[in-house]
Image 1: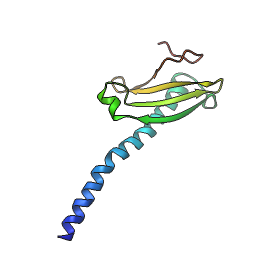
Image 2: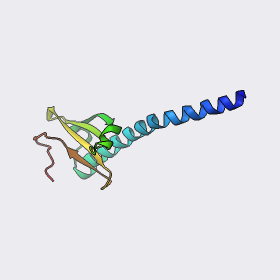
Image 3: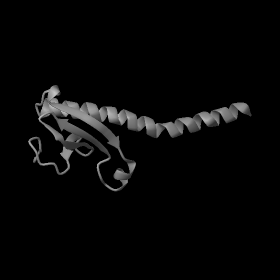
Image 4: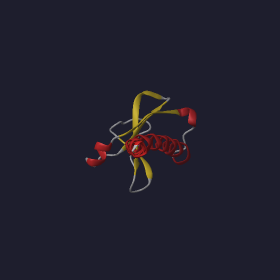
Amino acid sequence: MKKKILIIILILVIIFSIPFVYVEVGKRKLYKRTFNYLTNVRGYEKNEFKIENPRHSFINRILSYPEWGIDVVFKDEPTRVYMYTYDLSDNNIIQYGGVNGKHFEAD
């Protein structure tokens, strides 16, 4: 009897921890993908920008908004925050948001 209860509790802990692990692993992947995009594709040096606040929202996915988001602040524009997201359909990082500045990507 005690063994069954222990197994049930263990299964419940695993089930309830899956979303937290998914989000934490996803944040790390988003950070790495954004860093690679900015340095390899856009040609920025790593000291020209700072990546902040990786975030996830299950509600955004339901509402058809980007599920993942991350903020980038460039050294030469410290008061502007550029928002990037991971596009699942293209498997690519894209910029979104309404900031018009030196680093705005119109394409």
